Structure formats: structure tokens, C-alpha cells
Length: 77
Image 1 (cartoon, rainbow, N blue to C red):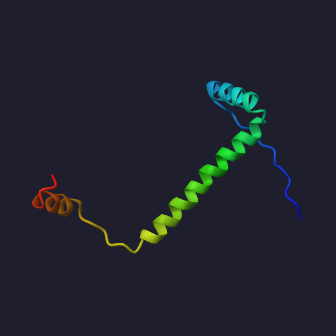
Image 2: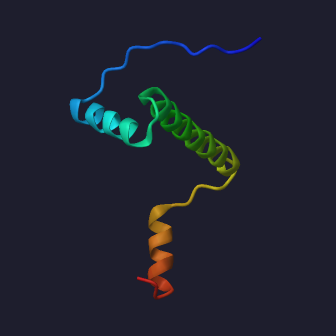
Image 3: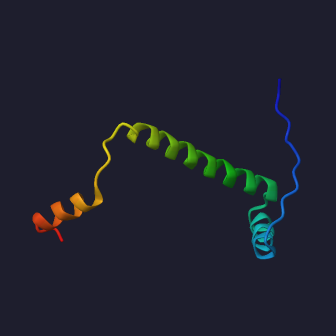
């Protein structure tokens, strides 16, 4: 079963829309391709962040004041 592109109405800030139109013309690509690529990149970054959060969930919490005091004691600040 293949996937078919879905249509959506998106409202852009006029300056962003102008930049998209110019980039599309300069790169000979449709605006939808540029937007799809940007959305995929943003979602991939979100997935990486979520994975990092999950990996760090078991780390102990650090007390900010204790960390600052430790840095000062060690001459780092």
C-alpha cells in the first residue's frame, strides 16, 4: 500500500512565504518539498531529543547550589 501526499492549508508569515518562494525558484524545487524536508529535520531532532531524555531519565538529580559550591571549592569559579 503506497502513501499519497496529503493536502493541508498552512498560513505563513508574508516574509517567510516570500523567502520560501525565492528559495523554491532558486533551487528549482517546489515549496512543498522544501517545507517537507524542514519538517522531517525538525521531527528527527525531536526524536533524538526524546531518546536522549529517555537515556538520561535514570541519572540522579543534581542540586544546583551543591554544584555551584563544589565549583567554587575547586577554584573553577
